[in-house]
Amino acid sequence: MASGPEESGRERIVQASSPSNDADKLAGDQALEERAQDMTSNEEIAAKARSKDLRPHRFQDYVGQRAVVDSISIAVMAAKKRGDTLDHALFHGPPGLGKTTISQIIARELDSQLIHTSGPALERPADVVGLLSNLKTGDVLFIDEIHRLSHAVEEYLYSAMEDFRVDFMTGAGAFAKSINLPLQPFTLIGSTTRAGMLSAPLRERFGLAYHLDFYSTEELARVVTRSAGILEVDVSESGAHEIARRSRGTPRISNRLLRRVRDFAEVRNSGTITDAVAAEAMEIEGVDALGLDRLDRLYLMTLSKNYQGGPAGIQALAATINEDQQTLEDVVEPFLLKIGFMIRTPQGRRTTADGFEHIGLPPRLDGPTGQGTLL
Ligand code: ADP
Figure 1 (tube, helix red, strand yellow):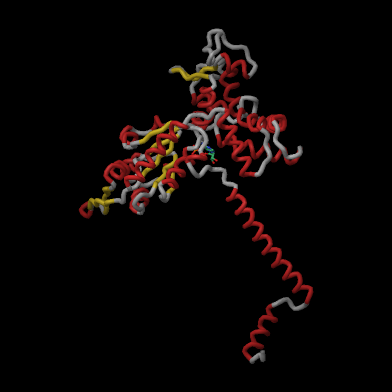
Figure 2: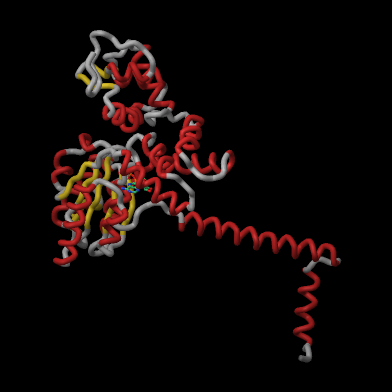
């Protein structure tokens, strides 16, 4: 093809802006190529991470919590059959037990869009009014940590949940005007670690309310085996049980420990996770045979040693350990209560005989007993 003046002109410009000698040009090309490769590997990493999403996507993949799954799946099927929106639902229980996961499954099974927000994110009434007015028919609004909604924001939810409308004021003084805004029918799903902190009017507006409990070792072993399959990790049955036993009854911890044990197995061993490999890796992580981590043991040691087994107030304990009170109440205490290492009394927290024994201290003779333990 004959090159016209315009084309040769363009060629010149290209040449002028390109590296003047061959070595520079080569280096430039190589850098471009490396960047392109970097981008591909970043995309590959992102795609890999996405394909290794450990969250179950359907009810049949959701391990355990049978009573909850049976009840909510019937409610979902009935709502779909009627062509109606699902009743508002509340999930409560300690962190990491699958409240967000089951909410996502519900939205998926309803073929609805899930809008994810949290109590602390909805600071001003305008935030919640904006969010609600943008909802489409059948949308699922998921509010995590719903107990942390401010009172002012919460009040807008009452009429929104009950009558699908919000009333709000615009302007001020003589220009103040009350506006009644109709909303599209939607489903609110609230998630909380503190059902007790929810106000009665809000709690009463949930037609469905479920408590998620800690998982059994068998159930967690199933979670580990399922996740190992997705992560393409080789884990023996006894290895899965070892991880499950140390997971504090919590699937999120099972998945976290599985990843740590996998790293350990890949670096130090053949890559297969046996019970011995799992136990060694978790000892290094500071997770003991019952699944207690450093913070759990520090809490128990402080209550048992500094406060001679209590009774001690939670504020005093939090100050001594230098840890956030809410973390102790939401994360540490539920599991210690569950395994009977401590009790809550009106006077304060107390270590049980089992709790003393676990950290190698002699029990107090006037102290409470643990579950199934006689002093
Ligand atoms: P929460 O909202 O209660 O804090 P999540 O729903 O975020 O907990 O769950 C934490 C992780 O644990 C999820 O990423 C998921 O992989 C896993 N998980 C939770 N529940 C289950 C379950 N029933 N079956 C399998 N995996 C689960």
